[in-house]
Length: 244
Image 1 (cartoon, rainbow, N blue to C red):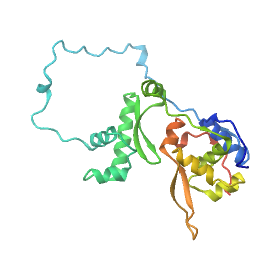
Image 2 (cartoon, rainbow, N blue to C red):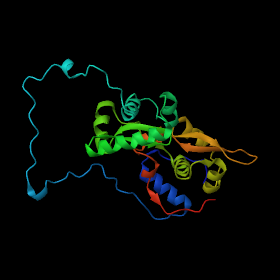
Image 3 (cartoon, rainbow, N blue to C red):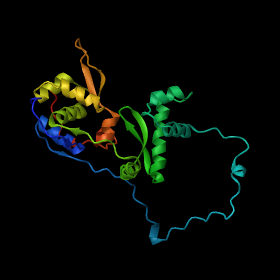
Image 4 (tube, rainbow, N blue to C red):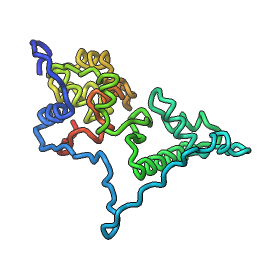
């Protein structure tokens, strides 16, 4: 595919990424998995009417009276939840273990699973999501419109077909070297990869083995945000292509 020529920009979606990749590797069948966005509400047994919660007392006691005399130390789960609420870049398990004395990376992951179990049981509108760069607390997809109404949605990526082809190869084959992308596309992808890196959709994630130590590319957290994906498993599924 030639890098020259003019093509009109179009709004890119995750579905288009799947279609572009399928065309590049031979047009395998693909489908988008449906993601359950909310847990079903359990019905009361035998048609019974669920009891209403007890009303709040008319004059609740002052907050100071409910605080124990001796402060209770926070649990590991509470500490991990606080770390995730701080925000910032995705939090790696190893980074959390370095920041909290006595907390191992494995314990961090166990706490994340415990938090998600509580969130699911309470039907919370958020959950802890594992991204390629680490863990992040994020609202569920069904509530994304509320966030966008307050702050605006992520800037849509307008990419021509050359950039879309290269991005789809990086997304599905990462970590992937430029030579592999060039082989599949049939042309040099250097300029296109630099464009995707400037847009923050692609980044260098390592180097290959062997004498060449070729640079390897992968997608970023911004890629997931722009295409409204929780993680790479949300990409449209394709038939397993044969690697070059």
